[in-house]
Every structure is written in C-alpha cells, then in structure tokens.
Length: 340
Image (cartoon, rainbow, N blue to C red; front, side, top):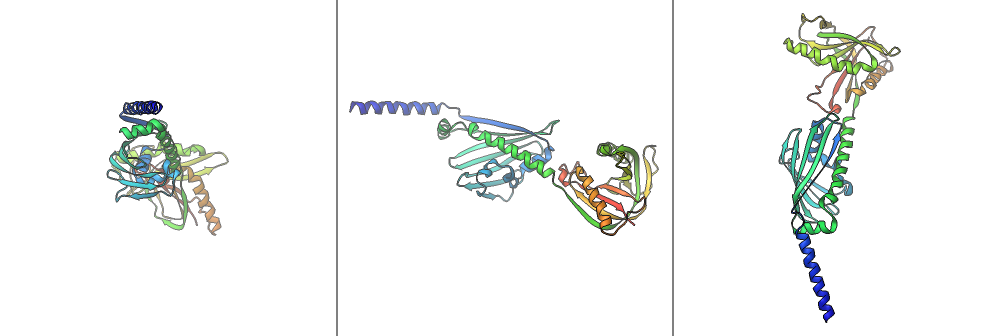
C-alpha cells in the first residue's frame, strides 16, 4: 500500500510539474519564411490573392489532393473565403481580411480539426533588384491545449515552417511556369490597312535587337506624347533587312499616327505605309518566343503556295502594353509578312 501511495504521489507531482511547464510556455507564437522570386510583384500578388489558385502551390494539397475544397462566393481580395475538409488535412477555413495591391495580404486561418486554433496569416511583397521578395508569416495565441500539443509534438514553427518553405518553392515554380506559357497562331491572309507613322531607324546586331527596341520604343512614344500627337494604334517595328549570316539587321521603330506629322526632331521622321496583302501570325507570350513565331510565319508562306512580296513590309506589332500586362504570358504580338 505504501508503494502504491508513493507511486501515486510521484505521478501527481509529475502531472503538476508537467502542467506548470506547459502553462509557462509562450502565450503567443510567430514565424515567417521568405523567398526571392524572379517575377513581377503584381503577378505574384494576383496569384496569391485568389484562393482558387492556392491548390497550385499549397504544400498541404500535396499531402491530400482529394481533400474537399469549398469556395465562398468571393475568392479574390478582401472578403474572399474558402474551406477544406479531409482525412489528412482535417477541417478548417481561411478568409482574407485586408489587402493592398502589390504590397500585402492579411488573412485569418481557422483550424477546426484535429484541434481548434485561429492564427493570422500575412503575405508581404517587396520588389528587389533580383525579383520580388515574398514573405509568408503566421502568428497567433496559444491556449493550454495548444501549448500541450507543442510540448509533445514540437513548436508550431517547427511543424509548419517547412510547409511554408515548400509552398514558397511551389509558388516560385508555378509562377515561372505560367510566365513561360505561349502560343503561336497563323491567321492566314489578311489586308493590312497601312497608314502614317512616326519612326526612327537604326542598325543592330541580331542578338541585340530586343535590347535596342526596348531602348528606342519609349523614346519615340515619349516624343509623340510630348508633342500631343495622336497615336492611331499599337507601336510596331518594321524590319528593312535581316542578314543572319553577318548577324546584322536594319529596322525602324514606329508609332502609327492619324495624320501626316511634320516632326521637329531630325531623328524622328514621318512615313506612310501603303496598304498591303499579308500573312498574319499572332504570338501570345514572351518576346523571347518571337524568333519561333517568325519561323512559323515564314514556313507557312511556301507551304501554302504563297510567295513573299519583293521588298514587302515585315512588321512586328506590339498589341499589349507591358505596364498594364506584367505577365509575359499575356503579351500579344502580331506579325505581318507581305505576300504577292
């Protein structure tokens, strides 16, 4: 009997000691993980801001792809909501409480099973020279049951931070893959209406064409704006010569205008493009795919019994404004090759 009492006494002391140890654990927790992703801040913000995108980068969905997801009437921005229920993931929900475009998103995550817990989720987006620094944070309070869980199973950071790191890695991979998507479509024969345009001409190595256009286009666009010249459409490049053997090309960077303009800058001239018959090809995607688009367009002509027009126009028209469409996958470029 004495032995039983002694063991019971020791057990009681152990229980009391453990309870005290659990009780004195921190009442709050917080942690964050960050990753620099080579993508525009708005592309990343928009991806995270829509809960319907979360299965693409959620580290938890990997554990249970068949978990039931239920979306609220709103999935984007403040008030957006979704919930989950699964044998592995348990049951819970998340709601967006605040957001500032391209800066931060604040959310509340509520766990119901296997235990009840509410925590604050924060996403911060910071442009850097290397890309965008994305920081995913979690913070909350710990009641006694939560403290007991962490004492025996490890801290919330220890158990959850690896998932955040995995999620950021998947977000990186998903966004980069999205940005690389492109399509090339040959529309066939069309009539280009021609018209007046402002232009400036230069020569360049073929491998430096993109950087040269990127430098010249804003200048001629700025000239039109500063002189209140109405633009009649999307800017374009007119290729005059293309000599792959010598890695050389001559081209004009152009802005279409409604009327003939008398320019005051000797580097900016006015031209008139006559209407012409052409094969039209459209690239939707990054400009890095333009060479393939030109190859597809050029191959289409002889394969379909057509002939290139002697000294006919060869145009590259930039339909989308990069400032409005930061994701390269959304950029649209039309190619016109004159045919007889």
